[in-house]
Length: 498
Image (cartoon, rainbow, N blue to C red; front, top):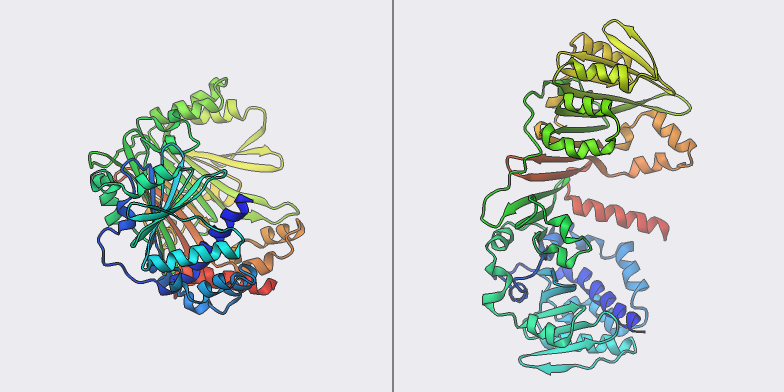
């Protein structure tokens, strides 16, 4: 009963919030009151810039489309107050600007947001309760009012003339104490959070890694490492024209940038020129082997040959999938590149790790039969190649690089970072062999899927000099904001099922 009661309120708030975005306006406050009540011991604070999101999404163009109709007709039914709030979100009393979600130890979750009319908000809360046959009991406290939902998750709703707070897993006393957090003890006393907030994007999340274990399922030992101790994580997500951009920053509490020592800048990226420009996937890493060995060696500690090969590796490697051979079962075409300290590692690979497979030498490279695959491998200088494509190995031995893939605009400059991942998401460019295989495998609508798939590619990279991990999801449509394109496609999909 209580779960239905609480779900009724959350559904109402969600519906009003979605449509209330139409009325969002910029806040002129430097720090809204709904932020200043968050205590300094919060381990996570997420901000959602609702005004900015609605501007980018152009939500007004979707008001009469299937998704809005589904919310209107599928949600409130015959409940007049909910229908009124959906048609006129301003009557909810909520000021749709920036919403904050935060975590407090040991397990409280808070949501805070501004109000433009406390009386309208109270009226809406009472009316929604009556329509759901769950009358509310409003309690008065010093300068505020609250409602306590005592069963199960113990949710408390507190509000005054300017702001509202929802605190889950809480008592009224705790919620009222949070609501009255003094300036000297709020989150803005943390210098790192202030810096984070000044750089916020559409959606941003700040995490105190030294305290996060208290509010998460992760054990303290997982986060209590030299890399995470007394450090913060800043996560940003921005919806731009033609792409969704995100990045993660690790920073210390003394304002210096963390230098994580496992990654390195590659001494020589020339071996990347052997990767084909039409790669569907590229994964690259450049690490300091001495630090990486303890993690890699755990894969197979019993194999001395494996250990010898690892210790011959100089820390640079790249993998590319660039096609599928035409057959009943499409065999992926791949190439693996790695830099070695000397030839001993390559000899260990051929003579020990691959000793049970048939091998033959051909013009500077070795052919290895591993049914159903045929591998071609060679060592040129300190660079080793293993591939399923004979043309690739011949070009490698002849020192013929690919058509300048490192300069490809699809990969931008991130390919020079020590950790890099690229995935081509343009399904229309996928090989026919793969499309035929997926169709035969039961995905008969693959042609329709690739025609309607809106994404172009995904890039993920990490730069140790700035300790920033970046992610860019690019769309085919570069003329409109990415959020608008995604919502537009979602509306079309929902409309086609109605």
